[in-house]
Length: 373
Image (cartoon, rainbow, N blue to C red; front, side):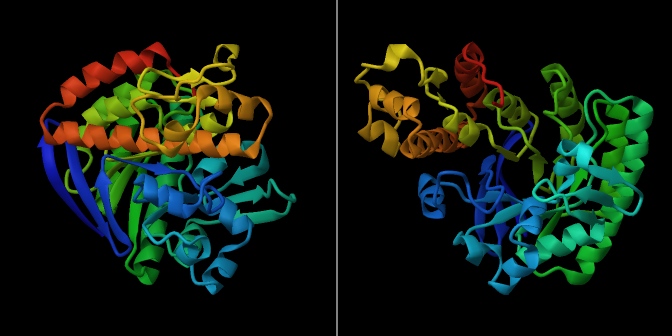
Protein backbone atom coordinates (compact mmCIF):
# COMPACT_ATOMS: atom_id res chain seq x y z
CA UNK A 1 0.00 0.00 0.00
CA UNK A 2 1.20 3.49 -0.88
CA UNK A 3 -0.13 6.71 0.60
CA UNK A 4 0.30 10.12 -1.06
CA UNK A 5 -0.90 13.48 0.25
CA UNK A 6 -2.18 15.55 -2.68
CA UNK A 7 -3.21 18.77 -0.95
CA UNK A 8 -3.20 20.18 2.58
CA UNK A 9 -5.19 23.06 4.04
CA UNK A 10 -4.14 23.27 7.66
CA UNK A 11 -4.68 19.81 9.11
CA UNK A 12 -7.34 19.07 6.51
CA UNK A 13 -6.03 17.12 3.54
CA UNK A 14 -6.83 15.13 0.43
CA UNK A 15 -4.77 12.09 -0.41
CA UNK A 16 -4.67 8.85 -2.37
CA UNK A 17 -4.29 5.37 -0.93
CA UNK A 18 -2.93 3.02 -3.59
CA UNK A 19 -3.57 -0.72 -3.22
CA UNK A 20 -3.19 -3.71 -5.48
CA UNK A 21 -6.95 -3.61 -6.17
CA UNK A 22 -7.12 0.11 -6.94
CA UNK A 23 -6.77 3.63 -5.61
CA UNK A 24 -8.88 5.35 -2.96
CA UNK A 25 -9.33 9.12 -2.85
CA UNK A 26 -9.61 10.53 0.66
CA UNK A 27 -11.37 11.80 2.65
CA UNK A 28 -13.43 8.72 1.85
CA UNK A 29 -16.49 6.94 3.15
CA UNK A 30 -16.69 3.14 3.20
CA UNK A 31 -20.17 1.60 2.93
CA UNK A 32 -20.55 -1.26 5.38
CA UNK A 33 -21.03 -4.72 3.90
CA UNK A 34 -21.13 -6.72 7.13
CA UNK A 35 -21.86 -10.10 5.56
CA UNK A 36 -20.10 -9.39 2.28
CA UNK A 37 -22.99 -7.31 0.97
CA UNK A 38 -24.01 -3.69 1.35
CA UNK A 39 -27.66 -4.28 2.17
CA UNK A 40 -30.10 -3.80 -0.74
CA UNK A 41 -27.30 -3.01 -3.23
CA UNK A 42 -25.29 -4.90 -5.83
CA UNK A 43 -21.51 -4.40 -5.94
CA UNK A 44 -21.90 -2.92 -9.44
CA UNK A 45 -24.29 -0.28 -8.12
CA UNK A 46 -21.92 0.62 -5.29
CA UNK A 47 -19.11 1.08 -7.81
CA UNK A 48 -21.26 3.08 -10.24
CA UNK A 49 -22.28 5.49 -7.47
CA UNK A 50 -18.58 6.20 -7.02
CA UNK A 51 -17.31 4.19 -4.07
CA UNK A 52 -13.75 2.92 -4.24
CA UNK A 53 -13.67 0.77 -1.09
CA UNK A 54 -16.12 -1.11 1.11
CA UNK A 55 -15.88 -2.59 4.61
CA UNK A 56 -16.72 -6.17 5.56
CA UNK A 57 -16.81 -7.85 8.95
CA UNK A 58 -14.34 -10.51 10.06
CA UNK A 59 -16.50 -11.83 12.91
CA UNK A 60 -19.59 -12.39 10.76
CA UNK A 61 -17.76 -13.88 7.77
CA UNK A 62 -15.81 -16.18 10.07
CA UNK A 63 -19.05 -17.56 11.49
CA UNK A 64 -20.88 -17.71 8.18
CA UNK A 65 -19.94 -18.98 5.59
CA UNK A 66 -16.42 -19.34 7.08
CA UNK A 67 -13.12 -17.85 5.98
CA UNK A 68 -11.79 -21.18 4.73
CA UNK A 69 -14.74 -21.55 2.35
CA UNK A 70 -14.25 -18.00 1.07
CA UNK A 71 -10.53 -18.65 0.55
CA UNK A 72 -11.31 -21.90 -1.29
CA UNK A 73 -13.67 -20.01 -3.59
CA UNK A 74 -11.01 -17.47 -4.53
CA UNK A 75 -11.15 -14.89 -1.74
CA UNK A 76 -13.66 -12.27 -0.69
CA UNK A 77 -13.30 -10.06 -3.77
CA UNK A 78 -14.25 -12.92 -6.09
CA UNK A 79 -16.84 -14.33 -3.69
CA UNK A 80 -18.86 -11.09 -3.61
CA UNK A 81 -17.89 -9.86 -7.12
CA UNK A 82 -16.27 -6.66 -5.83
CA UNK A 83 -12.95 -5.99 -7.53
CA UNK A 84 -11.94 -2.81 -5.72
CA UNK A 85 -10.31 -2.51 -2.27
CA UNK A 86 -11.87 -4.07 0.84
CA UNK A 87 -11.14 -3.21 4.47
CA UNK A 88 -12.07 -5.78 7.09
CA UNK A 89 -12.44 -5.01 10.76
CA UNK A 90 -10.99 -7.52 13.19
CA UNK A 91 -13.98 -8.44 15.33
CA UNK A 92 -12.99 -6.03 18.09
CA UNK A 93 -16.26 -4.11 17.86
CA UNK A 94 -18.23 -7.33 18.24
CA UNK A 95 -16.25 -8.00 21.44
CA UNK A 96 -17.77 -4.71 22.60
CA UNK A 97 -21.30 -5.05 21.17
CA UNK A 98 -21.80 -8.72 22.14
CA UNK A 99 -20.41 -8.34 25.66
CA UNK A 100 -22.88 -10.81 27.14
CA UNK A 101 -21.58 -13.56 24.84
CA UNK A 102 -17.82 -13.27 25.43
CA UNK A 103 -15.01 -13.61 27.95
CA UNK A 104 -11.72 -11.74 27.48
CA UNK A 105 -8.33 -13.07 28.59
CA UNK A 106 -4.71 -12.22 27.80
CA UNK A 107 -4.66 -14.89 25.11
CA UNK A 108 -7.78 -13.72 23.28
CA UNK A 109 -11.56 -13.75 23.40
CA UNK A 110 -13.84 -16.71 24.00
CA UNK A 111 -17.28 -16.03 22.62
CA UNK A 112 -20.53 -17.75 21.81
CA UNK A 113 -21.93 -17.36 18.32
CA UNK A 114 -25.00 -15.15 18.18
CA UNK A 115 -26.24 -17.51 15.44
CA UNK A 116 -26.19 -20.94 17.08
CA UNK A 117 -24.53 -20.52 20.48
CA UNK A 118 -21.40 -22.46 19.49
CA UNK A 119 -18.20 -21.54 21.34
CA UNK A 120 -15.19 -20.01 19.57
CA UNK A 121 -11.84 -18.57 20.62
CA UNK A 122 -10.45 -15.56 18.77
CA UNK A 123 -6.79 -14.70 19.31
CA UNK A 124 -4.92 -11.80 17.69
CA UNK A 125 -3.18 -14.30 15.43
CA UNK A 126 -6.50 -15.89 14.47
CA UNK A 127 -8.01 -12.50 13.63
CA UNK A 128 -5.15 -11.83 11.19
CA UNK A 129 -5.29 -15.37 9.81
CA UNK A 130 -8.99 -14.95 8.99
CA UNK A 131 -8.47 -11.59 7.28
CA UNK A 132 -5.51 -12.88 5.27
CA UNK A 133 -7.67 -15.79 4.11
CA UNK A 134 -10.40 -13.37 3.08
CA UNK A 135 -7.82 -11.47 1.04
CA UNK A 136 -8.63 -8.04 2.49
CA UNK A 137 -6.58 -5.13 1.18
CA UNK A 138 -6.57 -3.39 4.57
CA UNK A 139 -6.56 -5.49 7.73
CA UNK A 140 -7.27 -4.28 11.26
CA UNK A 141 -5.60 -5.51 14.45
CA UNK A 142 -7.67 -7.17 17.16
CA UNK A 143 -8.49 -4.74 19.95
CA UNK A 144 -10.86 -4.28 22.86
CA UNK A 145 -13.32 -1.45 22.39
CA UNK A 146 -14.20 -0.32 25.90
CA UNK A 147 -17.76 0.86 26.66
CA UNK A 148 -18.68 4.39 27.72
CA UNK A 149 -18.48 5.24 30.51
CA UNK A 150 -15.54 3.23 31.85
CA UNK A 151 -13.32 4.16 34.78
CA UNK A 152 -9.73 5.03 34.02
CA UNK A 153 -8.28 2.02 35.81
CA UNK A 154 -10.26 -0.37 33.61
CA UNK A 155 -9.40 1.53 30.41
CA UNK A 156 -5.68 1.53 31.31
CA UNK A 157 -5.75 -2.22 31.94
CA UNK A 158 -7.60 -2.78 28.67
CA UNK A 159 -5.03 -0.67 26.84
CA UNK A 160 -2.18 -2.90 27.99
CA UNK A 161 -4.06 -5.87 26.56
CA UNK A 162 -4.84 -4.10 23.30
CA UNK A 163 -1.21 -3.06 22.86
CA UNK A 164 -0.01 -6.60 23.47
CA UNK A 165 -2.53 -7.87 20.92
CA UNK A 166 -1.34 -5.25 18.41
CA UNK A 167 2.24 -6.55 18.76
CA UNK A 168 1.08 -10.12 18.25
CA UNK A 169 -1.00 -9.11 15.21
CA UNK A 170 2.00 -7.37 13.64
CA UNK A 171 4.31 -10.34 14.25
CA UNK A 172 1.88 -12.81 12.67
CA UNK A 173 1.07 -10.43 9.80
CA UNK A 174 4.74 -9.93 8.91
CA UNK A 175 5.22 -13.67 8.52
CA UNK A 176 2.12 -14.25 6.39
CA UNK A 177 1.22 -11.01 4.55
CA UNK A 178 0.68 -10.85 0.79
CA UNK A 179 0.45 -7.30 -0.63
CA UNK A 180 -1.86 -6.28 2.21
CA UNK A 181 -1.75 -3.44 4.74
CA UNK A 182 -2.21 -3.62 8.52
CA UNK A 183 -3.69 -0.76 10.56
CA UNK A 184 -3.24 -0.25 14.30
CA UNK A 185 -6.14 0.95 16.46
CA UNK A 186 -5.72 3.69 19.05
CA UNK A 187 -7.90 3.03 22.09
CA UNK A 188 -7.98 4.77 25.48
CA UNK A 189 -11.59 5.78 25.99
CA UNK A 190 -12.15 9.46 26.70
CA UNK A 191 -8.82 9.81 28.55
CA UNK A 192 -6.44 11.85 26.39
CA UNK A 193 -3.33 10.75 28.29
CA UNK A 194 -4.19 7.10 27.64
CA UNK A 195 -4.86 7.90 23.98
CA UNK A 196 -1.40 9.51 23.72
CA UNK A 197 0.13 6.46 25.37
CA UNK A 198 -1.67 4.14 22.94
CA UNK A 199 -0.51 6.17 19.95
CA UNK A 200 3.08 6.21 21.21
CA UNK A 201 3.13 2.43 21.59
CA UNK A 202 1.53 1.77 18.21
CA UNK A 203 3.94 4.07 16.39
CA UNK A 204 6.83 2.04 17.84
CA UNK A 205 5.27 -1.13 16.39
CA UNK A 206 4.93 0.68 13.03
CA UNK A 207 1.70 0.10 11.12
CA UNK A 208 0.67 1.00 7.58
CA UNK A 209 -2.13 3.20 8.92
CA UNK A 210 -3.67 4.24 12.23
CA UNK A 211 -7.29 4.23 13.36
CA UNK A 212 -9.09 5.91 16.23
CA UNK A 213 -11.38 3.31 17.77
CA UNK A 214 -13.79 3.34 20.66
CA UNK A 215 -15.57 6.56 19.67
CA UNK A 216 -19.25 7.01 18.82
CA UNK A 217 -20.08 4.43 21.50
CA UNK A 218 -22.39 6.66 23.54
CA UNK A 219 -20.02 9.39 24.68
CA UNK A 220 -21.11 13.06 24.35
CA UNK A 221 -20.09 14.66 21.07
CA UNK A 222 -17.84 17.05 22.95
CA UNK A 223 -15.79 14.11 24.22
CA UNK A 224 -15.33 12.76 20.70
CA UNK A 225 -14.27 16.17 19.38
CA UNK A 226 -11.86 16.60 22.29
CA UNK A 227 -10.12 13.32 21.41
CA UNK A 228 -10.04 14.23 17.71
CA UNK A 229 -8.57 17.67 18.41
CA UNK A 230 -5.97 16.32 20.83
CA UNK A 231 -4.87 13.10 19.10
CA UNK A 232 -5.41 13.44 15.35
CA UNK A 233 -2.62 16.01 14.76
CA UNK A 234 -0.10 13.63 16.36
CA UNK A 235 -1.05 10.60 14.30
CA UNK A 236 1.71 9.97 11.72
CA UNK A 237 1.31 12.48 8.91
CA UNK A 238 2.61 10.09 6.26
CA UNK A 239 0.06 7.34 7.06
CA UNK A 240 -3.73 7.13 6.55
CA UNK A 241 -5.88 8.14 9.51
CA UNK A 242 -9.14 6.28 10.04
CA UNK A 243 -12.02 7.13 12.39
CA UNK A 244 -13.83 3.85 12.96
CA UNK A 245 -17.60 3.53 12.97
CA UNK A 246 -18.36 7.24 12.55
CA UNK A 247 -20.68 8.41 9.77
CA UNK A 248 -22.73 11.31 11.13
CA UNK A 249 -21.82 14.03 8.62
CA UNK A 250 -21.52 16.64 11.38
CA UNK A 251 -18.87 14.46 13.00
CA UNK A 252 -17.25 13.84 9.61
CA UNK A 253 -16.77 17.57 8.99
CA UNK A 254 -15.12 18.05 12.39
CA UNK A 255 -12.93 14.98 11.91
CA UNK A 256 -11.79 16.00 8.44
CA UNK A 257 -10.92 19.42 9.85
CA UNK A 258 -8.55 17.61 12.24
CA UNK A 259 -6.95 15.56 9.47
CA UNK A 260 -8.94 12.28 9.39
CA UNK A 261 -8.96 10.47 6.02
CA UNK A 262 -11.27 7.46 6.29
CA UNK A 263 -14.75 6.75 7.69
CA UNK A 264 -17.28 3.92 7.83
CA UNK A 265 -20.76 3.58 9.26
CA UNK A 266 -24.10 1.83 8.71
CA UNK A 267 -25.83 5.21 9.02
CA UNK A 268 -26.76 5.88 5.36
CA UNK A 269 -27.94 2.32 4.68
CA UNK A 270 -29.71 1.62 7.99
CA UNK A 271 -31.46 4.96 7.95
CA UNK A 272 -32.55 4.34 4.35
CA UNK A 273 -34.23 1.08 5.34
CA UNK A 274 -35.96 2.91 8.19
CA UNK A 275 -37.29 5.62 5.86
CA UNK A 276 -34.88 8.40 6.85
CA UNK A 277 -33.29 10.09 3.84
CA UNK A 278 -30.52 12.69 3.60
CA UNK A 279 -31.01 15.67 1.28
CA UNK A 280 -29.43 19.02 0.49
CA UNK A 281 -32.16 20.61 2.61
CA UNK A 282 -31.79 18.32 5.59
CA UNK A 283 -33.09 14.87 6.43
CA UNK A 284 -36.56 13.68 5.45
CA UNK A 285 -38.67 11.01 7.12
CA UNK A 286 -40.47 9.65 4.08
CA UNK A 287 -43.19 8.01 6.23
CA UNK A 288 -44.70 11.41 7.09
CA UNK A 289 -48.26 11.94 5.81
CA UNK A 290 -47.34 15.28 4.23
CA UNK A 291 -45.64 13.36 1.41
CA UNK A 292 -48.60 11.15 0.43
CA UNK A 293 -49.51 13.35 -2.56
CA UNK A 294 -46.18 15.15 -3.06
CA UNK A 295 -45.20 14.91 -6.73
CA UNK A 296 -41.75 16.48 -6.28
CA UNK A 297 -38.49 14.51 -6.27
CA UNK A 298 -36.86 13.64 -2.97
CA UNK A 299 -34.05 16.16 -3.56
CA UNK A 300 -34.20 18.47 -6.60
CA UNK A 301 -30.42 18.96 -6.36
CA UNK A 302 -29.69 15.22 -6.50
CA UNK A 303 -28.93 13.28 -9.70
CA UNK A 304 -29.27 9.78 -8.27
CA UNK A 305 -31.47 7.19 -9.95
CA UNK A 306 -34.13 7.55 -7.26
CA UNK A 307 -34.43 11.33 -7.48
CA UNK A 308 -34.43 11.36 -11.29
CA UNK A 309 -37.25 8.83 -11.58
CA UNK A 310 -39.54 8.82 -8.53
CA UNK A 311 -41.63 11.19 -6.43
CA UNK A 312 -41.84 11.55 -2.68
CA UNK A 313 -45.42 10.25 -2.89
CA UNK A 314 -44.28 7.02 -4.53
CA UNK A 315 -41.40 6.56 -2.12
CA UNK A 316 -43.79 7.02 0.80
CA UNK A 317 -46.23 4.53 -0.73
CA UNK A 318 -43.48 1.92 -1.10
CA UNK A 319 -42.31 2.46 2.47
CA UNK A 320 -45.79 2.25 3.96
CA UNK A 321 -46.40 -1.00 2.04
CA UNK A 322 -43.03 -2.34 3.25
CA UNK A 323 -42.03 -3.11 -0.32
CA UNK A 324 -38.49 -4.35 -0.98
CA UNK A 325 -38.16 -1.65 -3.63
CA UNK A 326 -38.47 0.97 -0.87
CA UNK A 327 -35.25 -0.25 0.73
CA UNK A 328 -33.52 -0.35 -2.66
CA UNK A 329 -34.49 3.14 -3.81
CA UNK A 330 -33.88 4.73 -0.40
CA UNK A 331 -30.46 3.10 -0.08
CA UNK A 332 -29.44 4.15 -3.59
CA UNK A 333 -30.26 7.74 -2.70
CA UNK A 334 -28.55 7.83 0.71
CA UNK A 335 -25.35 6.24 -0.59
CA UNK A 336 -25.32 8.61 -3.57
CA UNK A 337 -25.80 11.57 -1.21
CA UNK A 338 -22.87 10.45 0.94
CA UNK A 339 -20.64 9.86 -2.09
CA UNK A 340 -21.43 13.32 -3.44
CA UNK A 341 -20.94 14.93 -0.03
CA UNK A 342 -17.43 13.48 0.25
CA UNK A 343 -16.65 14.41 -3.36
CA UNK A 344 -17.70 18.03 -2.75
CA UNK A 345 -15.68 18.07 0.46
CA UNK A 346 -12.55 16.92 -1.40
CA UNK A 347 -13.16 19.60 -4.03
CA UNK A 348 -13.48 22.23 -1.31
CA UNK A 349 -10.14 21.19 0.21
CA UNK A 350 -8.57 21.29 -3.26
CA UNK A 351 -9.89 24.84 -3.75
CA UNK A 352 -8.85 26.01 -0.23
CA UNK A 353 -12.53 26.55 0.63
CA UNK A 354 -13.11 23.90 3.28
CA UNK A 355 -14.12 26.56 5.83
CA UNK A 356 -16.82 27.79 3.47
CA UNK A 357 -17.97 24.20 2.94
CA UNK A 358 -18.20 23.74 6.71
CA UNK A 359 -20.10 27.01 7.21
CA UNK A 360 -22.58 26.08 4.47
CA UNK A 361 -23.28 22.50 5.56
CA UNK A 362 -23.22 22.51 9.36
CA UNK A 363 -26.48 24.53 9.76
CA UNK A 364 -28.27 22.17 7.35
CA UNK A 365 -27.01 19.08 9.12
CA UNK A 366 -27.56 20.43 12.62
CA UNK A 367 -31.11 21.55 11.82
CA UNK A 368 -32.06 17.95 11.16
CA UNK A 369 -29.47 16.13 13.22
CA UNK A 370 -29.94 12.38 12.83
CA UNK A 371 -28.90 9.68 15.25
CA UNK A 372 -27.48 6.39 14.02
CA UNK A 373 -30.85 4.61 13.94
